[in-house]
Image (spheres, rainbow over the protein chains, first blue to last red):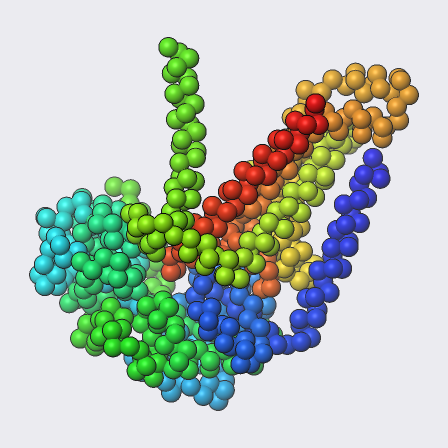
Length: 351
Length: 256
């Protein structure tokens, strides 16, 4: 029996030496960038180009939510990764927790390409810790075969009796309560229990019309015409409209919830120079153009937007005007009020 | 009548299990990016899949970790089960019970605990930490499976072998091992599956240099899962079927 036990141990030790060696080689070389993000969140062609131009190898690993990324980075004390992509208020949270490293603006030569509209958000007023990468909105999509899109102007139109059983709402708590708050004229970041409760009442009244609460496969539901009207992310809407030309994307007049994903450098990053080079690279107009063409969300990069084909420039789901976005707000942290949101969300889902 | 009903029931169960997989396989040939209706036959998703080096790397990493983790877990788990079943020593009951506790302990607790352990032990996160974590995850399942088999085991057979002059190690190789082999094989397959689709533990214990498939697919939620994943699922499923059939054929010829 003793002899049997030894075999795995020997193999394990051999593996150990085999695995540790290349890791140390990497650290000495320094031509590496450890990118931590959602899957396929950067065009592969752009990553290849970056590797070719700088000789820096991009090592790409993934997370599925801001919460998961935050938890892991917190435990690692900000070490191991060189670039992360936190959404709006996670920038604030990570900054407060001392997890982000200050970005050296002198190394970001393309900073001037950015649109002032997405800079200086409440989560990072001076953009010392985050550089906008991609942003988007949660608007409304309708099928023009079943309803004249011109008659749909408000979130309240979801209530119309002819949409009974044909409405899609997002399963994202902040998005869905957010549009209800907007419909009633409140802020998407409201901390008032009375306002959140009113939003809940609005959604409760709407609930009999709702076919499904979903966020992962909204495109399919709209393309397959299972639903006639509902919430949609603008990038999803562009893809859906290409597949099914009857679909139209609408910016309700009360405004809508916006999101912004930014590039940040964790405080313990080992390749900070490479990280600055990468951020500067993504801000180049040609790269910004590639990003929009691949993902069809909005770019924070004015110079990159100029390069887009007219078809995308004139598509208001990709390129919203200031009028489209009147009254819209970035979803920000609501602090302790998060519990109130969760309470009413539970009530909505279970009643 | 009852026979027919039970057959119908069996078919129902199998359809329930296999239809979703078949749907994924059919969609991997659908010439549409997001539509749910059929828009013609195409191989293009397979082309895209094999051109997607990041995805292929992750898939190969996953297969490698799953194979190694299942093999180590089977060896260690079987030994653990043998010790717990055959020898009497202080603390045995506690150890026996704690194996079962591990099979039901939540993944998230295990993931965070292991990450804290690796940080404290200053082990660089990556392939090795992932492998150790997966072995730990799978080991109790193998032990439990083998223990169940050992419980039905007639100890007199070993006594008989020893009476006939077999040493402990010969008795192990010629009597015990062949008799518990089905349980070890089942434990290996179970471990392979557990390792292949673990997301929670893997997320915490893998490092910036080692990516695996479940994490990659899971984190596509932001922009939506692409159809080349359907193609990958089809390839993996076909591979599994081939492996199972091969294993089946091998055991049959050996028996003859």
